[in-house]
Length: 292
Ligand SMILES: Cc1cc2nc3c(=O)[nH]c(=O)nc-3n(C[C@H](O)[C@H](O)[C@H](O)COP(=O)(O)OP(=O)(O)OC[C@H]3O[C@@H](n4cnc5c(N)ncnc54)[C@H](O)[C@@H]3O)c2cc1C
Image (cartoon, rainbow, N blue to C red; front, side):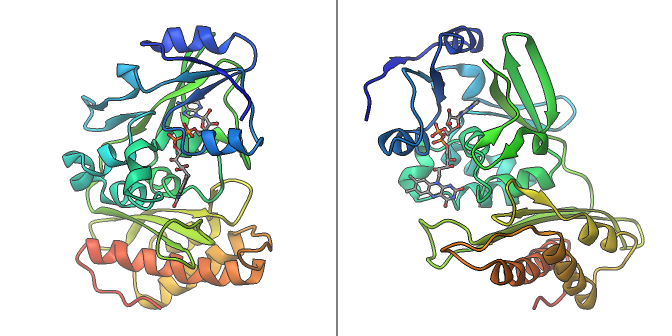
C-alpha cells in the first residue's frame, strides 16, 4: 500500500477543511477503503478518520419521532440500539448481514452507502424507510433523499469536500412493516447476487396504501421497483398479488451477467426475494400470506 498521512479531526468542519487539501479521502470503519487501497483500486495521500467526531458517531432521537444515525456509527451499535431494533427491525437486521461480527464492529452504515456498491446490504431497508441523507461540505449543509446519493458503481453525488454526516429515518408509520432479503451462495461473508427490500403500509380497510421496493445487485445503483410498487397500491395483500409484484420487480431490475450469476438468474432471484420479503412484511403486520 502506498504510504499516506493520517488525521483524526474532532469536528465535521475540521474534516471538511482537511478534505480540501488535495488527494484526501475519509475513512469510517475502513472495511472497504483499506482493502481497496491495498489492492490499488483507490489511492489517497491523506486519510481522514471520522470515528472521533461525536456528531458522526452518535444515534439521536429527533423531536418528530424519527432517528438520526451518525454516518460513522458501527453496524454493531446500530443493530443493538433498542429503538432501531424495535421500530426499524429491518434496518437492524440488514446491517447485521454485513460481513462478520468483527467486520460489523468497524463497518458503518455511512461507509456502506458512500462506497456505493450496488450490492450494499445496509441500503435497501433504509431507502424503503424513506431515509434522508444529511450532507456537510464547504458550501454548508444540505439534506436529500438517500437514494439520490448514488451515481453509479463506486460513485456518489457528493460534491468535492462533502461528507455524509447522518442517515435520517422518519418516524415509523402506523400499520407499516419493512423487510430485506438477499441471496448469497454462502450463508455469510459473501456479496449478494441479488437482494430485495420491501416496505408496505396498510390503510384502515387492510389494503396497501403505500409500498416501497428497493433492489440490490441488479443495477448500477440500488434500484426502486416502480411497476411492482404501483401494482400493490389499493390491493389487499394476498399470495397471488405478492407473486405478481415479484415478477414486476424482476422486470424493473437492470441486472448484468457476471461471475456471480447471469442476468436471467438474478431476475428470478428478484422475483422470489421480493415476494418473500413482502410476505414477511405481511407476517409482521399479523397477516398470513404464503410466500413462493
Ligand atoms: C470481509 C468483509 C465482508 C464484507 N461483507 C459485506 C456484506 O456482507 N455486505 C455488505 O454490504 N458489505 C460487506 N462488506 C463491505 C463493507 O464492510 C461495508 O460496505 C461497510 O459498511 C463499509 O463501511 P466502512 O465504515 O468500513 O467504510 P469505509 O471503508 O471507511 O469507507 C467506504 C467508502 O466510503 C467513503 N466514506 C465513508 N464514510 C463516509 C462519509 N461519512 N462521507 C463520505 N464518504 C464516506 C470512504 O471514503 C470510502 O470510499 C464486507 C467487507 C469485508 C472486508
